[in-house]
Image 1 (cartoon, rainbow, N blue to C red):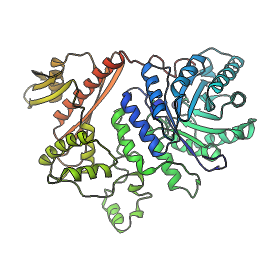
Image 2: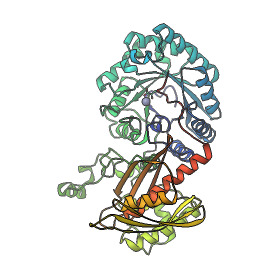
Image 3: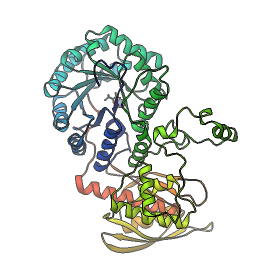
Length: 520
Ligand code: KIV
Ligand code: ZN
């Protein structure tokens, strides 16, 4: 971006920090690297890769993302404390373009947590932003809960941060409290009032508690903000953050009233949305704008008739614009490996030869059981392809159930190379199966979430199952897909257990030691 390009909106993605920090959305190290690479490839300007002081795992992830970065600026979060800022710098310093993002809660309620007076906090801001600026020439500062901070005090601290060297001032609506008119007005007045404001970029960071995050972010741009902070699928604590796909597509589709542009390759939206849903274990709601399964589906007769005559009757953007392949033909049991690879490419999935081999075996098996294999089926297969070196593998499962009594599961598993089997009864087929898994692999993981979705229509549709487990503060999600819901459930449960095993082994107890909301 050049400074003269005043209509360019910088996209700051915080899926890996604000998004990942939401309870249950924890991603593994490799998943974070994969998502960072996808974000970089799609043209995200700044990736907030994590909160380095929070845990060893966060630090490692931010460092490695920084080292692998291509075009994006890599940013780490730090509280207004010198050790936080030093740790953040250590993690981001190897990026081609590093940024330190430091913040402190400035509203009366947030000031009360560290018990600082207004003057003491102002001094802390001066000291910490100066320290960050001495380490890195790209510093972002945020007054957390800005939208509930007294106007005079907000102006005062923003001015201090600018004078201390911050080049981006982010104005967070931490609790999703503001509304569009106010959001635009706040940024406009800050730019008009604070000395030096025209020398820095103003950013907007909105939470979605009242369902206004996208509207508030776009209003802030109208007020003069030129950086939007957002996450893929709107992932984030409570009701989430502004959704990247929504602001980017709104700016693209409504150029007539919002003449701003971003650097995002919108054709990559759908793929990254699916990957984030999979790795975070947070499925996308069917009617979610842009990336929901129904966002481009036209069910009713009147809609279908209109669509056939002219797609623009009911479509304001084309599915291809967000990376949804046009209505290409489904694959069938006679399709070969080359057709499968071509289909995967069309869906934005690149796989190595070994993974293709695994997916192909599963595809053939599915095609034998299901007449037509649709795009969503293929994507579910990709999700369900587990790593071959997993400690726990499902070998066989038989379940007997009926209306008259408990269900009985007979399970065979390979555990570290040894075949083991168990029989268990349970309250329904899934309960019996999970109990049998626990008999073979005793563990104290608590089932936090069990979710089943049908991938396509029909009684032969594949079911995708998500399972989230929690053990000693560690969270792991597992997914799988199969035309048999109970088999998919068993595989998803085993997938989550395998991830817990890896996490336990690799990092010891990788529990978040600090939350960015803890103490400021
Ligand atoms: O919501 C918030 O205030 C934040 C800050 C750390 C920017 O995420
Ligand atoms: Zn936030």
